[in-house]
Image 1 (spheres, rainbow, N blue to C red):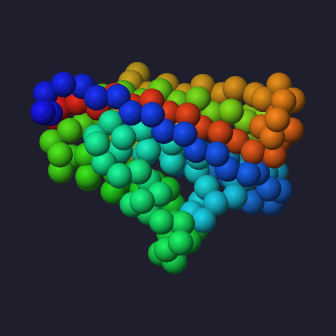
Image 2 (image 1 turned 180 degrees about the horizontal axis):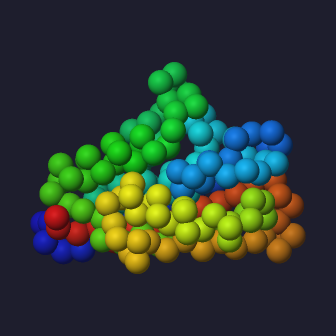
Length: 161
């Protein structure tokens, strides 16, 4: 059962609010706006975890880390990654690659992209060349284009350890 690669998809959306801390892919970013969430609102890590959990045939992030649970209030999403990787390892699987798109008009990702990729590689036990992160704008269309929200979409390839 575990000898074939598996693919998973994760998507996460967060409203943006002025004055909120901005942590994306586990990296603190100086920004006038940040994602609103029960945890730290790191849409990149939430989507990545959901993609990995999906590929491994496990419950989704919301089932494992309820936004109704007090212990998850303001929790660092990097902790969700640690638990996700433990669950994947327990199934004798490992992450083979991650590909992520973050749609947001603010903050601009280019100055932070290398640090974000490095942190993703660290959290998911991957060489940096097996992690890709792309930033896209909303082109002034919809809540993303108006700077009201951000959306992260992640695809994970998982296979035998």
